Length: 353
Image 1 (cartoon, helix red, strand yellow):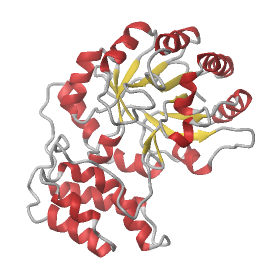
Image 2: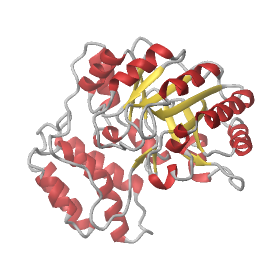
Image 3: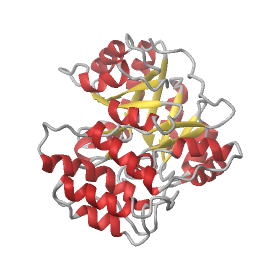
């Protein structure tokens, strides 16, 4: 059952950390992989799609029922049908969740065109009805993940006031509009404004790329913590490093050999021999697109791995760039100018929920 107060962080004197939900990425296997390097304080599931005929997705549900990370996990919903949101929230409340999280931030056009996810930000009155009904139905924590607006920020204050009106327990706020997706600078001043206006803790989300940048964002915004998505794919040590930095310790140095071990862990956890080899290669490239941003400044590893067609090629390239000089340091920040993008044979679109 959901708890009635926010689960305390594992390290209560430090700021909170959370792994951002990323659809088709942050499943049970990825959470378990991340836990090998230092879990965040909180996890959030991929979104349960909610509509008239929806039930509980068994794969997403497994990230709740089989989770062995020892950290609280929030169940995330996406939808706009109020009776069905209430129905699914009540069903999920029978499981060991930390609370129910409403997705009002997904920027994928195929999502917001259905007036769900980030699309809800265009309709504050609908948001108010949804939050009101969920608040009345959910005994435990009710949290929201959102952006600062859809096309602009005209509704921002109204939406923040609705969070107060309906006693929302936690806000995860990405500092861009839906239409900006991931292309603009993050508008941290809006996160600062939210921290000052809402009654609940705020997690700052957007371009938190390292322990040092996390500290800068916390200092700038006054947020209670940070939510990190893509940077955790690149660097699963980031949550441990944030705790080290904020407590005055030296940040752990990660070697390229350790990164190669991480890649091997992902290979074993995220791919199955029953899947065609080309699909396995494409799936691994999704992760390597991010990891490669911190391997070498020239982008040689990034460009080489994108050309690989077979697993032997792909992992041979990993060995060449990561094990030739295994003691070399993995950059804490992504190198400038190295952009993660899908490989040519992959149509996968990574969406931070």
